[in-house]
Amino acid sequence: MKFSDFVATDTIRSDVQADSKEGVIREMAQSLVDAGKIAACDLEGIVKAIMKREDLGSTGIGRGVAVPHTKHPSVSRLVGTVAVSKGGIDFQSLDGEPVQLFFLLVSPPDRPGDHLRALENISRQLRDDSFCRLLKSAKEPIDIQHLLEEADSHGVAS
Image 1 (tube, rainbow, N blue to C red):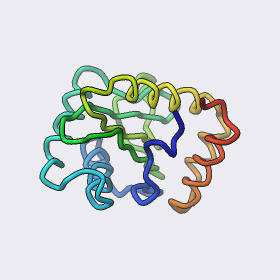
Image 2 (image 1 turned 45 degrees about the vertical axis):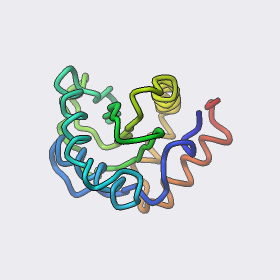
Image 3 (image 1 turned 180 degrees about the vertical axis):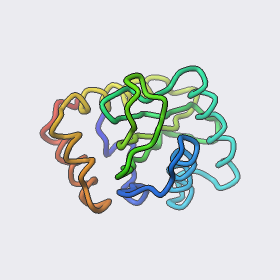
Image 4 (image 1 turned 120 degrees about the horizontal axis):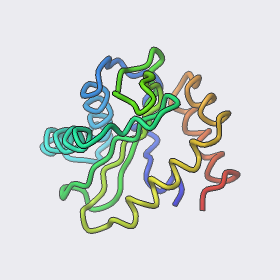
């Protein structure tokens, strides 16, 4: 699975304004609403579902990266977005460090394979330190999109 399979260009945020875990999740979910990827009436339910998942254990995986995700019946296919926080946000990450790079996923409950393949792709790509560094320093959403496209075509994604 490639980033282009689930990340919509018009949802990418290169400089989130939020300064809290719920705030960044809400801002990212709102970008999916704004792009027509999820319905406005489902925003609160999706944010609550992601926060419930966070209560089980932070999706802040370390090295300044978090992958908040959930399964939700309101979506018919996997959707996702990417966001960068220039200052970093306390996400209760495994390593205790602030998070700057966020990948948010929402998938239908009946498509667990897609969900897992997307998570695998993200984690595989994020092992590349230069990829992470370039994403964190991206100035505009289009810069992030180009990095994702580069990872899709030259990275280890399958």
